Structures are given as structure tokens and as C-alpha cells.
Image 1 (cartoon, rainbow, N blue to C red):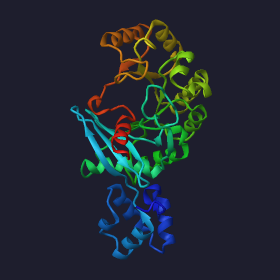
Image 2 (cartoon, rainbow, N blue to C red; image 1 turned 30 degrees about the vertical axis):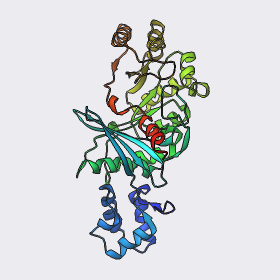
Image 3 (spheres, rainbow, N blue to C red; image 1 turned 90 degrees about the vertical axis):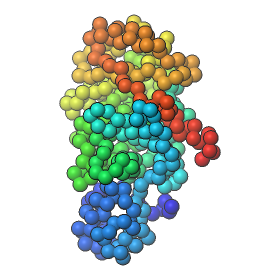
Length: 347
């Protein structure tokens, strides 16, 4: 595939109209093409376009869809897609089925620069940022794999990568995903997870895109957080929490704090005290996430440990629930499938 060609998925409808105008085509063609793109169809199947136009499009552009490299299917119905981008890079996208609909967890970078010690996403560092069209392609490809119509109801930017380090493209993706002429996913059905890039949180609050903002917290004690998340050195927790409060106040949206449970590390009384103090006065919720297996020095907690820590938080008035665990039997955690596949195939 010629990656030098522009990908049409990177264009908004208005931008596509400008491209068509530059080609000497009438503006209404842009809307026709845009609808085909939403269905993940190749130029050759856009049968309400003149053949000559389809040939010109194929010669000058590419659609921008990723290809499905492999799919791992869990016994709980979770599907983990390994997708190949136009330049050959691999990314992960996870489809999770809930009673309220289908949620797709997408990647925003190829690799990850954050270096969180419990996560496989950054094992080989960062390769590059993804474009807005590549992120949209994740959604459209999986949506098309599920059949005609709109099958994806919720999108979470919680896969590989730090979304707020790819700020410009992520914001454009959010606008493309929300666009009425596209998937038209409501902002309340979109969640974005960050390790805490404080200036970008402030910028996002002013964008008019009130997505659910989630902070990967994992410890309310700065020294402990620094041990597992290098981001704490650059963006200390007090300033990050200030930005999260500002986001809540600006958008009116409840914020989410993600807390991975590491046996013997962040599940004691002092951890519960620190969490309750840190979040006091916020309209927020804590997602408790048991570690998937063991990573380095860290072990997954037992059921008794999980219940004990949950009780500690309830007694302190912290709104917290254990997040439903999906895809454990298919390496559901971020980066695991990509890392194994590359190790086994050398690709």
C-alpha cells in the first residue's frame, strides 16, 4: 500500500469537500464518499460514483482503513483485534460486550512512552503517534466486522498510548467520531484515559468536548505513584488533581479515577486514607482494577484482599466499584497480544 497517498479518513466532511473541489468535482460527491467511508467500503464498491471518479480517487488517495491481522475471541465474548496500519505497524483494539451495548477500546499511539511498570503497552517504547483517521479506522473496521448499521455504542480511548500526548489528532478524532454525518457517537458515550498530562487536561476542558475523563491514578500517595508511574516526576499529583477538578467544573462531567490493585503495595489503610483525602469534594468515581496476573515484583490480589480494600473505601465514603474483568483468557490487558504476536512472528 502506498502510504504516501493521503487517507480520506483523515478528512472531515468539509475538508473532503475542499479536496473534491480541487479535483473539479461537484460538492455533493463529498457526502456520497463520506457515507461509503463510514461503511468501511473500498473505492471500487462506491457504486453511486462515476467509474472515472472512483479510478481518480484510487490513483490519488487511499481510504485509510486498517487491516485485520488476527482476532482473539474470549469465552466471555470479548474480541481483541490486532490491526495493521498502512505503514505495517500493529495496534490493538478491543471489543467488549455489555448489556447496554458494544464498547470499543481503541489505541491512540503505536507503542507508548509512559513506562508504567504494570503495563505491557510500553515494553518497546513509542513508535509514533496515530492520525485521527487511523483512530477512526479502528472504530469503522470493527463496526463493519459486526455487520451493517451502527454496532459500536461506546468508545474508550484506553488502549495503547497516552492520548493527551497526541493531543491535536485525538481532538480531531473526537470531532470526527461525534460528527452528525459520521458515527455521531455522543460525547457522554466517549471516555478518555490519561496518565495525567496536566497542561493537556486544562486544554481539553476548554475544547467543548465533554467526554468522560479518566485518570490512571493507581496510588494517591505521590511516592508510591512515582514508583510505578514515571509521569509523577514531571506532573506531580497535586497539580494533576487541580486540573481534574477544573475539568469537572468546566464540563459538568463526573470524572473517573482508575486504580489498579497491586497486592501488598497500594491496598492498605494508608492508601485508603490518602485516596479519600485526595478525592474529597469531587464528583467522581473510582474504578478498582485487579492486576491481570503478575508483573515484575507485583502480584494480583486475592478476592479477600479486593473485598477488604473495597470495604475500607466504603467506610470512608469513596464511591468505588470493581471494574468488570473481560478478556482474561485472550491477554486482554493493553499491549499483551501485540507483544506476544510480534515475539512469535517477528513482525
